[in-house]
Amino acid sequence: MQTAPCFIVWYSDAAAYEINKWIEDLKGLADTRRLGSNAEETKRLIEQALRPVFTPMWRQAAVSPLAFMDLGQAVAQATLVAYDEGLGTCLMSSPVMIDKVNKLLKLPETATLVCVMSVGYPAESWEAGGQTRKAPFDDLFSEMEYGKPFKTSSEVWDELRQAKMLQEEAPLPWRDAELKYLMRALELEERITAFQIPGAQE
Image 1 (cartoon, helix red, strand yellow):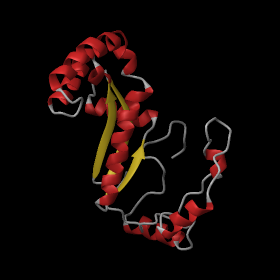
Image 2 (cartoon, rainbow, N blue to C red; image 1 turned 90 degrees about the vertical axis):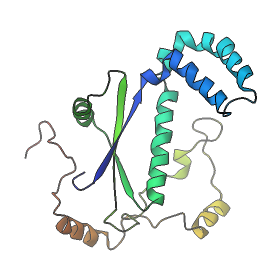
Image 3 (cartoon, rainbow, N blue to C red; image 1 turned 45 degrees about the horizontal axis):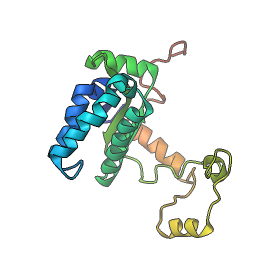
Image 4 (cartoon, rainbow, N blue to C red; image 1 turned 180 degrees about the vertical axis):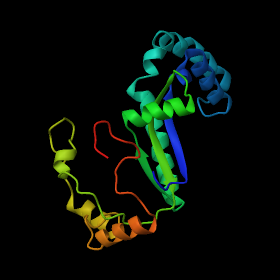
């Protein structure tokens, strides 16, 4: 946060799900041939089938997991595009940050700020210190029901290694020296937040 030249604020806006707007957006998809195979018939079905169902529940839908999944998809795509362009990103969020950004940008009351993404050219090596240590695969993923471990395949792991999709696990032997160099070169302060944590000593 101390050096990033660009920040993207990601928020979900419940107003995007207001029933009349949402219905018109769907009709726009029909008009541009992205929904249905017959534009007029699709728009008729939208009015007859979708409007009555979603009219009483659009406010609930606007704050449902599905609404935030839409935002999550956008964040994920932005992250991938940035990486493809040789950029680095970092997602940040906290109650203090959200409150300050909301006030600074004067976001509407219908907005729910989720995170801030810093974007810039990375100064560190592409490995970024190595692969973060993860919990065992069987603990992270279940098959068909919660608690039933998803069994791994040695063939898949071999394929991932051959495709160089697995990194060496952190910490890499030269990482400490890289961090010290970056701290000096960029004149960074040794801190983990850009704001004073309430109750913390200076």
